[in-house]
Length: 413
Image 1 (spheres, one colour):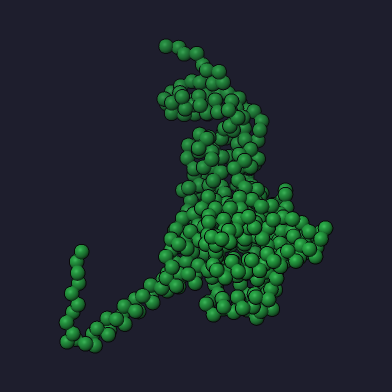
Image 2 (cartoon, helix red, strand yellow):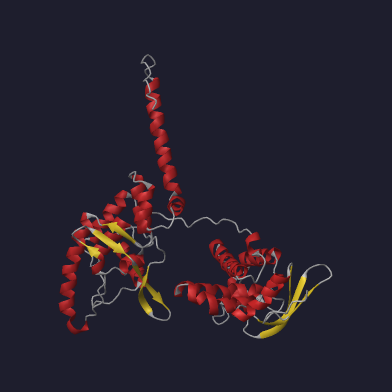
């Protein structure tokens, strides 16, 4: 029986091979409207691909390039779902790597071979040559002395994940039948090695920090393992000295649009309440008294931000400046150079070596999953396993020295 077409369906017909085709004007990824043909295994599937245009969704057609679609997604979809700094990293990745490498490819015709070849080129290409970094300075590649500055394995993996995320959105919106990027496997890169402070170095670190203006910050960082943005965004109202706890619910970050801003934590797991060590409570109380002295000294130039750790005039401390200040502090204290984030690694490592349960460490650090904690500190757990095995071997060896002693009876429950 003949059935009238729904509004927006365009022309729908059945092919000789049994598949259904549809033709109509749709919204392309670059924002224009074009007449295209789409196909589906059923009449409904073909009709929905055309009808998606009426809902403002671009259709992945032969006319939609990877560059056009990623530009659309960044400007119309991702901008509402991602934090600003994350969106900036995505946009930089798309602009520098994906668009130059795959931008002219058609989304509908993209294959696993295309993506694999693209990632292989990223691994081997000199970035100075590819991006023309030395053209203005007339160095390295610009004068024929190729420096072979390649992307790190983690960056290549990140580029792949950005492309995979974009194509996954296309699948969820019924623009693509499947995410072809999932068929491409990137090698698992080795995590960045870190050298946390030993127990002796940690004691030396705390002794050296006692005379520093930010003594309370350094002590809190080492004793609790908070992220840099978390304690720089800590407000006095987040601290409860009576119960000895701190509420971690925000982070200080620098954004392109607003500069230094206090934002909510990245994940729900990062929003947590932690117990403060007694030593840190004393240090924070002393720090508050010193801050009151700075407030009176600054007088009218004081910025009342409510932050626990501030500049001498009450403003927020830039995370980048904090890292530079930390490096100078290590040099003056005669300690080896580590990243500021390695204080967090030091906290977890020292807790593991003291036999603290992995679940407790996961809650303290604010990891979303215990697998993250277990994976990052796998080398520490392996060392502890070795110590446990050696202890057991020692006990068994001692038992073998007295063969005449009767074996202990085990109670089965």
